[in-house]
Structures are given as structure tokens and as C-alpha cells.
Length: 369
Image (cartoon, rainbow, N blue to C red):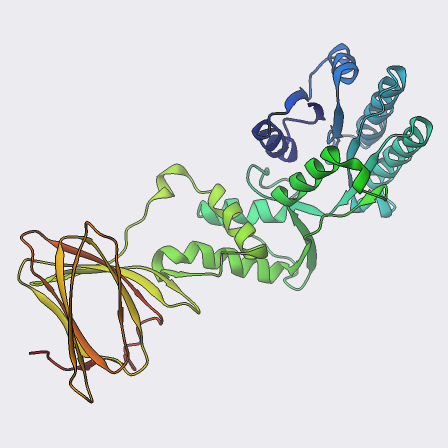
């Protein structure tokens, strides 16, 4: 499929172009400075059009009319000239409902496209997008998310005028997915006006707090719940603004005569990850827990795990090596230790189901014979 993308060098256009390329679409990129002859050639070949090009912060208000309305009108004239009955997506704005120069220009563009769609019986999808966020969005321009992420990732201050103000947002990958779904199966869309399935609302203050927490992970090791939904998308966006030297950071290492212990990451509800080492012949542990549970994975070396039930004194032993990935569980009510019985350093990854609490560690010494 050949897809004409206008505004292909913009934030949304860059993300869209990569996704289209990944599904083997040929992307014809109309960008600022491209000739009108090139646009006509693209329209004549296109199997679908995604119209993103527009002006939102011009030097002169007349540029709204020239770009948002004028370019859309020209595009429609070319589609009509070649009688292209192909799916068309238009990235409009929620401002189309607002009485200002920008909103009026977007509304006028919508009306031109709707008329074209009716005349040629074209499958048309108009998306009135709220704020779109994600990687490659220009900071300190017209996206509060991009500005906050960029500034905080780079150690710069942010300004908040009203922390209680609510903004509506959609994530760039969700927008791109919706656009591609439409041009792939336009007959499944019954309405000209389409919505992004996942839309988020958040206050400016809450947004700031979340991004501050992302930045603080390097010191606290405490991560947000970044595995799904808005927080997942926002965290990915924040990381995309990190300068390359900040791709790496050091975590504390606690060393003694037995080896060392390093905390990797802590979570709010799912415990923490760490690893430790033990020199040959060294035993670590020798304690039990009432409620805390752990999982051990030997990644290097050879270890003997010993267990003893603190009530019945039943005993059990396991031999585990780094050559075979096996998880060893510690069980409440069983004392346990781990001994390096190999000739090389033992390295063990550890997950505990709770963050270590110095005031209530739930760890009680009990040596195993």
C-alpha cells in the first residue's frame, strides 16, 4: 500500500511513518518545502492519505487560513482531479469547537473534506485530537508533556500556573494505531468523526508529580507502576528525552568479607529486585521469615540451599548452578541459607515480595546445622 502522509516530518508524522514502514507500506512524505508538483504526483499514486500537515503556532494569524485551509483545499482538488476513492484520515483538533483563528481553520478544513467525501463517496475519518504526547514531540512549544519531560530529564525547571487545571491527552502510538486501522479496514468505521480509544485526563499538578517520580528513581530506586496505561506511556515518553550520558546510573553497593549486595529496583506493590555475591565457601542467610517470601536465581557459580522447618525441624537441601536456570523459593516458617560450594564467585539474583523495612524486617536469625 502506498500512503501519502502530509506533515510527515512533524512529531506525529515521524511516528506514523515508522509504523507504516514496519508493516511494509510505502510512505510518500509531503513535508514543509515539498513542491506542489510532488504533492500531485503523490496523490495520483496513493492508496490512502493521512493528512497531518497544519499550522498551530504561526507568526501571523493569516497562516492558519493559508496552511490549514488552503493546503486541505488543494489536497481535495487533487483527489477529485484523479477521482481517487481512497480512505483519507484528517488530524483535526478539539479546538475545532472553539471560537478562535486556529479552531476556525480546522473546522473549515473538516468541512472541505466532508464535502469531498460525499461527492466521491470516500471513506473519511476525522480525528479531533486533544494533546498528543510521546517520543519526538517538540518541547517548550505547545505540549506541556513534552516540556515537562524534557526539562526534568535535563535538570531544567518547570513552571506551573494552575496545578488543578485538567488536560486531556492521547498517546502517539494509540493515535498511530487508530489511523492505520482505519486505512486498513475503512469499512469498519461507520462515522466520519472518530475517537482514539484510549484518552486520558490528568491535572497539571499530577502530571508534574509523576514525571518528578520518574526522575527520582535513580536515587530512590522506587519505580512507578509503569507496566500499563497512562503511566506506561508517560514513562516511555519521559525516557525518550534523556540525554545519552544519562542512559546509565549507578546504584549503591554494600560490601563485606562475604561478598556484596546491590539493590536494583523497588516497586510500590510488588516488592524489590536485588542481587548478591558470595566468595567460595561463604554462607549467607541463616534466618527465617513469618510472611516475607523470596525467589532466588543463581546466574553464576554453584550453590547449596539448606532449609529447616522452625517447628518440625524437617530439613531439605538443594544444589543449584548457574548453568541451569532454576528458581528457588524461600517459604515462611522455614529457616534457610545459601553457601557457595563452587570454585568461583557466586552471583544470585533475588526478588522479595516486599521492600525491606528496617523497622520491621520480618527476618529472624536461626542457623542451620
